[in-house]
Amino acid sequence: MKLTEPQHELLSINGTELSVLQQASIGTERGTIVLLHGFTGSANNWLPFFSPLMQSGLRVIALDMLGHGRSSAPDDPERYQMHHVRTDVLLALQQLGVQAGTAILLGYSMGGRIALGCALSGYFRALILESASPGLSTAVEREERRASDEALAGRIEKDGVARFVEDWERLPLFATQQHLSPAIRERLHAQRMQNRAVGLANSLRGIGTGAQPALHMELATLDLPVLLLAGALDQKFCGIARQMAQSLPHAQLQIIPEAGHTIHLEQPAAFLIHVQAFCQSVL
View 1: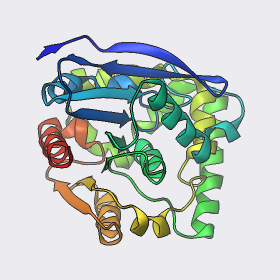
View 2 (view 1 turned 180 degrees about the horizontal axis):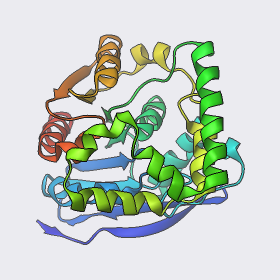
View 3 (view 1 turned 180 degrees about the vertical axis):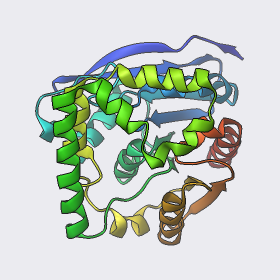
View 4 (view 1 turned 30 degrees about the vertical axis):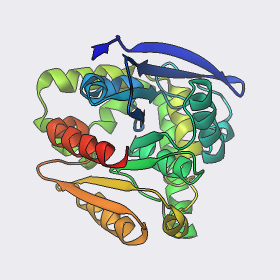
C-alpha cells in the first residue's frame, strides 16, 4: 500500500479554525480512525501511529482541539463547552467526507471525555477511550473541580505557559513518564510549550473535568463497540474504566501492564496491538 505524508489543513468551523492532520492511502481503505489528544497536547502526538494504522488499511485523522495546536483559541470560555466541541468535531468530519457510521473515534484523557460526548451523537461506528472518564458524578464534585480548574486557568494566564508546563509535568499523574527516553520527554515538552495561555486557560474553563456534563447515565445507551484502555500503574483510571465497562453494553476492557496515564507514550507497542485488533474486529 502506497502511503502519502500526513498533511495539515485548517477547516473553518462555526467562526473558528480547526486544525486537522490526516493521512490517506492510495487504494481501498477499510475505514477511518479519528484521534483526539489530551489537555496540553496536539494532533502531532499521534504521528508515530499514522504509518502502522495506515498499513492496517485505515485513513487516519487527528484533530487539534480548540485552544490547542494550530486550532483557534477563542477568548470566550463558553465556546469550548462540550456541545460546541462536539459540533466542531462532527462538522470537521463531514467537511472531510467522513460519512456517519464509518469512523472509529479514539480519545485520550481530555480527548476521551470529548470522544465520549461525540459518540453519544450516534455518528460513529465504534469508540476507543484511553485513560478517560464520563465526568464527575455529583454536583459537589463538579463545583469543587470547577473552582480548582478556574484557579489553575488564572495561574496560566498570570504566570505563562512555561511556568505552567513545568508544574504540569511534575504532577503525580505523569510520574511514570519519567521512565520515557530523554528524547521523547524533550519532544513532548517542546510540544506542550507551543500552546497559548488563553487556549489552555479557556479549555479548562469550558471543557475541563469540572465543566464537563456528567455522562454516567448515558453509558447504558451507547449501543456501539467500545474499547477501554487503562494503564495498570494508573490506579484511579483503572477503577474508572472498570466502572464504565460495567455500564456500557458492548465494552472491552484492557489494562496495560507497566503503563501509567499516557499508555500510547509509555507502552506504544501494546497500545497499537490493542487498537489495531479492535479496529479489525469492528470494520
